[in-house]
Length: 479
Image (cartoon, rainbow, N blue to C red):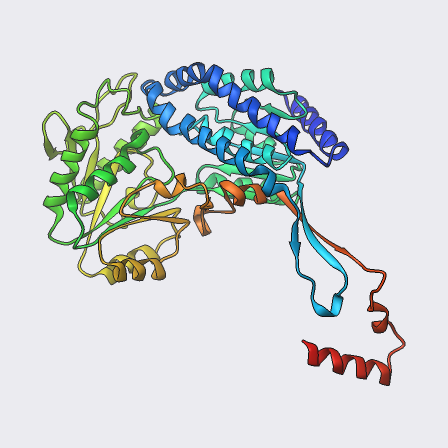
């Protein structure tokens, strides 16, 4: 779209949202059922588009990582939407009785969504589904790094929705900047912290509230008494899903000193179990672009130069080996071997930035206090993972750290819980969505008080004097 076309679509949705403020339950449900129908009928086309964008990513991986999440979201939202929409009654203080009061949950209006490339269907449609459930109109700007998927989304949304309900805007980063500057009633952005700051600044010019999901360096703490094989398998799954291109993937491991060799062997065995081969295996996704691939290789080269021990894991070899090139698929596939980095320090790029690839630094610690100090010295992460059996230690970690969310004795799974809000804190973002929390994020909660004809409020009217002193003394005793 041209800038003029984008502004025209925005004005179309804005006018529709103002003319039809009240959006009945049946209309909202019907819009969600259209998305469900779109996924059911055109899921294979979307999965093929995702595979074309990545170069190597099987339709089954997209089914698990994108469509399954969306189907659960739709099912949960359709089941609970009627209850979520109902006004919430609140009790009235004695001094205001017999007035009645409630909180009305109204649509905000037009919600903008800027979605990323790593889960290009799920992270585009999930916030759109919740915003539509809340009665809003939606404009979606998907990533330019997944052009096939973005084009399919644009075509399908245009087929199933009128432009004043839901539309897709395609374009590059300059168009995304224009999109973020529109005076939306709410704006959702998923991506890097650096770009999130720019989006927040653009939205602030219009006082547009934002939900920012920004990722970060999510730590994984291994306690000295955990089952190392079980922990390594779950860490490998969380790290290597989509080849590490996941906002809540474990970004580094904090490991008791002296257990480095044990963890490396357990992690290699886990990789072999999950991915018997790497190159040509559609379950193991490609790095999205050659530029992202080159960035990861540069990180490894710098870490080696600064003294880190880098081990790559080829599952056909059955064990970690010293890093040489560390990559496969330097051509079209861009598939990178799972890699462990021991002796990582804060001077290294891979400990300063979110990695977003299959590289896992391992930082050794002497005492739990050291691990917690390390976490708290950096920006607050989007996710935190802890593996162990001692509930007292677990609770100590939970009480002394702050993160967007936590999974204990697994990775990623808190995002799949329908009743848990998902979002970041500090540099990892703000605002939360999923379930009723997401519904409320896209609602205006309007306070309503209905005064009774028997109201005693006139007793507080001036002129003030001795009578008012007696009334206020009585009220103080009642409070």
